[in-house]
Image 1 (cartoon, rainbow, N blue to C red):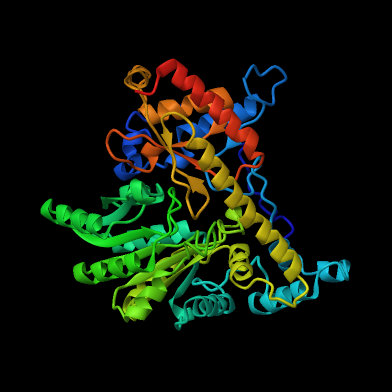
Image 2: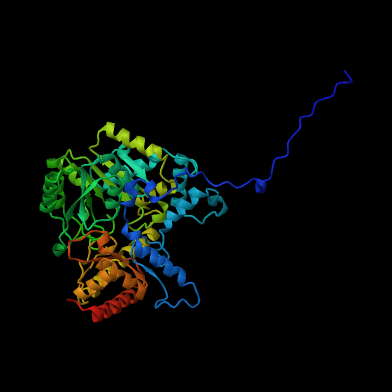
Length: 504
């Protein structure tokens, strides 16, 4: 067998990438263009992140240049309720961040003994025993312990039972709103009643899922109050036009208006939902942002519906992005379903399971929001000091800004009792409206663009929220520090505007 040799396979040298001749793509290849997209995507608009916000960011970058040539030295982000954004700089709640730190890196408790308060260490340990690692998926509906704590919070707030199995933790309230609207809409004829002005999330979501917005107008002359008659008229009009109203959206406290509903109006709205078979979506993310809670208390729709023993299907939303938490980037929130049958809850669970789970640190943020330190616990005094100072600052800024705006010619402003915003009306002259047309802008966009160009103040035009024909508004947050300087800049701009364009 010595004469036999092992055969060695021959390998052909492969050509290098550079030596391969370049071939043009086949002419049959269909390019990706806007027309390739779902047509509903092109109908989506979101004003608070629109043209003004994009231009503001361009100015923010330009200000970093040594000789930027701009007439201001900073951009003031008054267009969105993002409390901890650079420039707004609301201080995070210490208790929330300490619990987050110990759940993110549990070894810190041993590496820094005595640094963290005992109640923080205990909370982190309790959560970690349930969660394990924040790097792992949780239950798709949210961590069971945290859902039980949310249910207890709701029970203590309202005095009625809450079922943890009817609570879904979410990546902020917005994701819950979008999910439920996507499930409740049955195109092409289903409609959703939305307040005008409204938060643009609702019109954007309706555009995405081919739902029809059914506007009902808030009464600015009565503090942006909700008229039940206006809602009824909107329902009647929609039905006459072939639209099937399926959902009533109520934002309480209001965004952008800051109005707070009274219990009698809420009761009438629940009865209206019963009459017309509507699902009620209650956006209650500003429930703790009350500037005068004695005169304008918050009452949840869950409490109203339970008191009435109403069969109305109700979904109520809350978030860690607002209130005093201001933890927008952590993406935490929840919604509670009331009077939803188990078959529908199962379908909601199926849909949230597609996304696996909400962010764990967002869920932990929810637990800290609805279960803050109790009196007598080590963290309570600091927590109370921090939250009280935020409430005081918001109330003070809101009043000061409204008072000063109401002294300007052509501006009227409701001093909102809740939320984070003011929504003043500005009278624009025919000369200003003509100038806006020449610039191919709506008049309120033209006004707010000029405000940004001259002062660095980024506001949101009222057309992004909806308004009556011939009226113009803009939304400002009350989160901006240095409010005196901020308002003075706005006053100088507006007086210069009036000098150029007049009021009538």
